[in-house]
Length: 261
Image 1 (cartoon, helix red, strand yellow):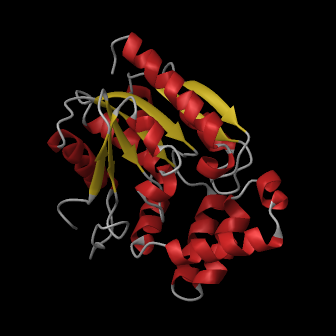
Image 2: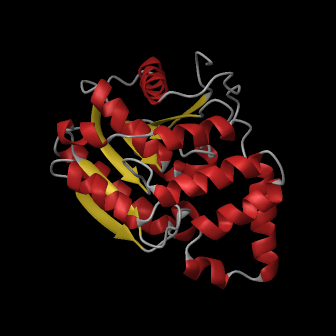
């Protein structure tokens, strides 16, 4: 595994570490809100192996190693303590980082996440993995079908839908096989009860990849966690960008007032 992930450092203020999704990237998953987050926080966004400018891993990814690397990058960037905003697979990374580095992590925002993939998500991962070896456009169609909220999907013009599929097919990161392998192996259920930092769980209620039941399980397992449900599919950064940013900013500003960030 590569020793250091390529990453962006933006803004100033309290620390905020980003943990992106499988088959995603910092720009792909957080690009729509990055500028706004950087107005109030020092945002550190690492790309996993095979995403962005980070070289692809030659071996399977391990949740402990990815979590440790993200924390190490944040510390090297000058953040002593920081909140973590995790998206999809990144919620597992964020939980593991909080478990392994409780002295560093001040809060968690877990969006469109899961504790352990259920049969539905495992089937999606299997299809994803098989399609990665062949037709990228068919994979993009599958991911669009599974991940996009029905309301958003059906509001697209045929030309917009085609452009979105073409764009996704071109975006699919080189490291996706390792990312989806990691998705299949995540299991943070046993560590949730030990998390003691303020936590916001954001459920995406129209999500076909990580339905809201997964987020409700996360929130139920973490003591004192707040659950917010937003009407969006998995692509919340596009489908409900303003609402997502709003709940993140509200949580982060409350953490600052309470001196936890």
